Image 1 (tube, rainbow, N blue to C red):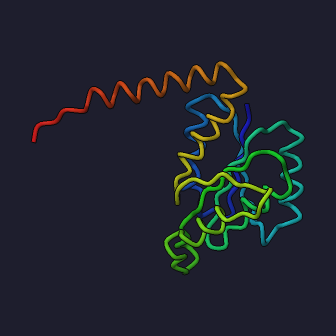
Image 2: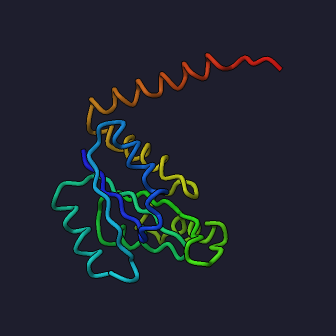
Image 3: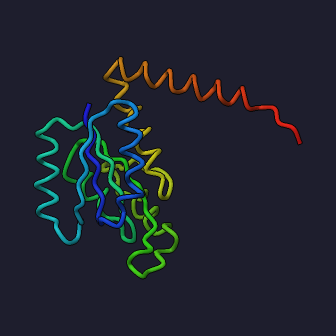
Length: 163
């Protein structure tokens, strides 16, 4: 059970760290890479091929602005890619609040899909990766079921409040 996490800039580390935390919580091995689809295309291609050869089964890719990274990765591998649109405030651009990244990632051409979570929601990307892996790994499926049962239990316990 291995997930690769890619993102285009070190300034996105804190945003993407939440995916890694979810994977760690479920005992899923992961490795993170900071690679730009535009600035290091050839190295990105080599790294994705390395990830394939090392048996990674899901890729999470976060990107802002033009947000090409998830789509470029999806175009060079058959490993499922989960895109995380990011708001880019470090570049000096307002980045349209991440809407530009969301639309870039979600509007992939036919035959090259990228699963996409909400803007800045790498945590959900981690959960989606766990769900994908749970199809193959029964022990992970049991952890996920227990996690969901606890969510339901917590919701039931807190459904009444004093106003």
